[in-house]
Amino acid sequence: MKRRNFIQSTSLTLGSVALKTSLIDQVEKKKLGVALVGLGNYSTHQLAPALQLTANCQLAGVVTGDPAKGKSWSAKYGFPERNIYNYTNFDAIENNSEIDIIYIVLPNFMHHEYTIRALQTGKHVICEKPLAIHSKDAQEMVDEAKKQNRKLQVGYRLYFEPHHLAIQNKIRENGLEDLRMMEASLGFDMARPGLWRIDKVMGGGGAIIDLGLYAIQAARRTKGALPVKVRANGQIIRKELFKGVYENMFWQLEFPDGTVCNSSTSYSTYVDRFFASQKSQWYELNPAFNGIGAKGNSHEGPLVVNSIAEFQQIAQMDEFVESIKADRPSLAHGAEGVIDVKIVEAVIASADKRDEVEIDWT
Image 1 (cartoon, rainbow, N blue to C red):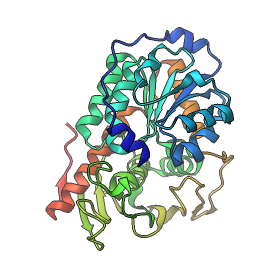
Image 2 (cartoon, rainbow, N blue to C red):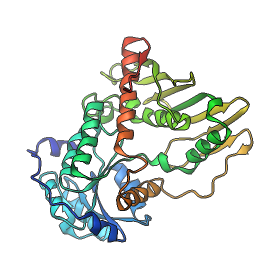
Image 3 (spheres, one colour):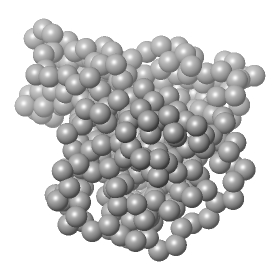
Image 4 (cartoon, rainbow, N blue to C red):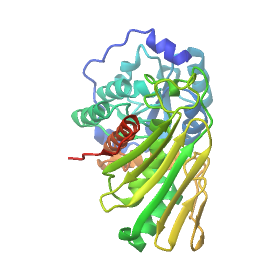
């Protein structure tokens, strides 16, 4: 809340034309410098520690509304104090050759503005999920990355998680045509008064746009297709707390060949699992989506993977640097975020209308 109040009270303007860092220079760098924008729980306990273990990048700076916190991070992680920025001088990052990537770790309603501004500084950008609250804004972010000739990744750590990849590979080996039913759900008891995530303006859509995204990803990436129909039911039990967003959401995605995925998400109770079946063959992750780690089982017995990193974000950020140096899209490139926000919009629309909604991908 402190960071949000600081930002809202500051007059912000878009930066001037960015001084572009040469892509050739970045290819020659052993590690690319990352600046974290927003030093909340996720940056503190996940991203900053993960950056210490990456092979291709390093924590090179921060953007924070708290000068004392910035200095403590500088001392702890060894980057110079000149690489501490605030929300007033944010655009000056364009002149800092030590920072190659800006990682947006701000409340959802700020993703669009700060990703656009970050791209306009000439830096590559990782934006935490959801890419934006509205698909129109998300597409604008993707378009801006193309305009600036910079890479945009969504912070989709599970695109690189070995248990999820193992199940996707197994199902493809067995034959995607036999995948007919999936279940994917994630929920936590986390809502409290004042939490920006349950504010319709700041959070966007409640649990569905925050936690439900993981279930959506699992379904469409496992099936290797985009859903064409949504049937959803939203529920609000604590009306004094949930105003304008659903407390619980239950939905079914239908794919072109009739395959369905039944899902739920919640800010009031715990659930964390993924299940997929092909005739008599089945695969399950329980837990599936949290940042601590997945655990898998199958019709063949426990799902065994070769290695599990301490932080899921290590592979995510290292792959982004590889995509920059190879001048190719990241596996979790910005268009993936646009797709998921469109599906979220369809889920919410179906719940609001109490009717099936078709998704038009043309």
